[in-house]
Image (cartoon, rainbow, N blue to C red; front, side, top):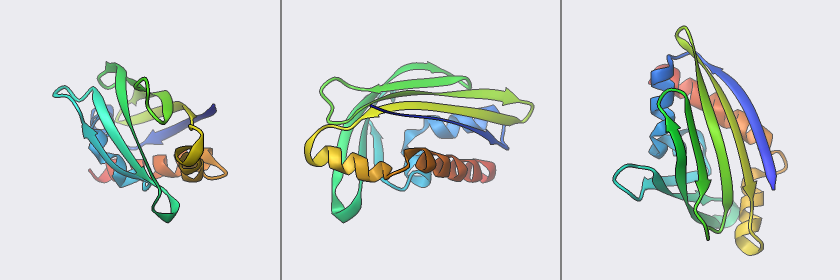
Length: 144
C-alpha cells in the first residue's frame, strides 16, 4: 500500500477552504486526472469517482465519508469491493483567516489493468502529485 502525507497553508478562511474541499465535484478543478465525482446519496456521504490516465485508460470506484466534522476534518475510505482501495483524512486548522490543511492518504491499486492505471496516475512520485494538487487547490480557493 502506498502512503502520502502532505501539509499546505492556504490564504483563505477555514469555512471557505472546507466548503470547497467538501464539494467533491470540485476535485477535477485541482486534480487533473479526476474526471468526475458525483454523489450517490442525497447526503453526499457516498460518492462515485472516475479518473483517467494515459492512453485513455480509466478507473472508477465508490468511496464513503467515515467522518465529517465541518471546518475541521473529513475522513473517507473506498467501499468494500472497490477496484481501488483507498482511505485517508484531511484536517483543516483555522489560523486567523488562513487555513492549514493536512492530507494523509493510503492507496492500494489492484492487480491487472486497473492497477497499472492507478500506478500511472500517481507516476513515480505520488507525493509530488499531491503537492501539485494542493498548490492548485490553494490558488483556486484564494480566488473563490
